[in-house]
Amino acid sequence: MKLSVVQLVQRSDFKRVSDAIPITKSRPKEKVDPPAKFEGVYAPSYTYAIALRLEALEAELQKQNAEYKVAVERARLLHRDITRAFRELTDISAGLDP
Image (cartoon, rainbow, N blue to C red; front, side, top):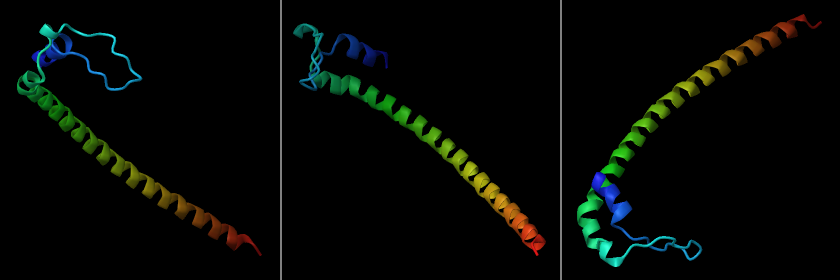
């Protein structure tokens, strides 16, 4: 992973991705690694880092989904209890009217 950071910071050049965004820094051509070297040496470590991050995000998403399901069930039960209480109140008040 350290080599990947070094590659980004010291051995790669900046490419323009939009005409609206100027390139403010460039490196001498002799200090820039060719794209093939990046693909062969550094890209696999980026892929690994991205895969680890995706796995962590998936685990977090599953945890949050489980918490969401618990919250939805609790809300459903509260709604049922409140509905039951209102029905009892309306039944009582309906019985008091002459």
